[in-house]
Image 1 (cartoon, rainbow, N blue to C red):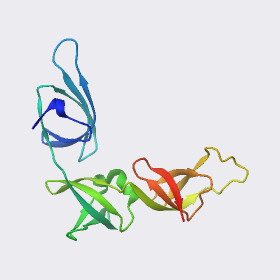
Image 2: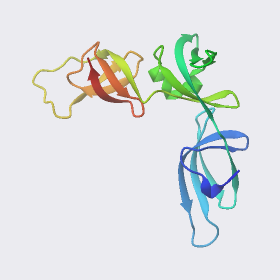
Image 3: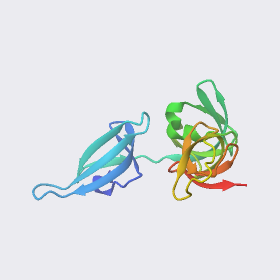
Image 4: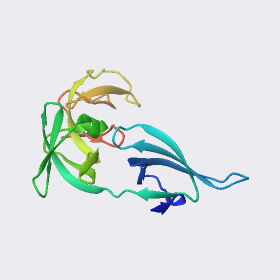
Length: 186
């Protein structure tokens, strides 16, 4: 148990038996009365957002997550199969657990999966990933080069803004933290 004043962004805490990831914290000291910790939380199991106010004397249970590297193998109906890279144990995850990580599911890519009491609660893709362009507009000759981007659909279905010179079948390096184009690979 920790004091509410020790809550930091990125922590996972337990409230009323549910796990929440702390997205924002603000220490509020009103002119009269006790200090408060105003937090914005995301429920790990369904992704819902919640604002929660803790009194400075409140105590909170911090949840510790186990992180495991797992390789994405294939899709099996509505589920996605991952394999532990150390024990070779396979698990199936639903799209609900994957959330935005589903945009980067390519076989043999290693993801970091956070587990709580042997249950997966979140899936994190690698920071950068190589994706192939499957659809984009052709290059317009005479168009200015300055800051003109166009949308490109990648092999996983995600759409990224890319420079004008990118064409179909190009392999791009994408930053998964912000769905941003980094560079074209040879």
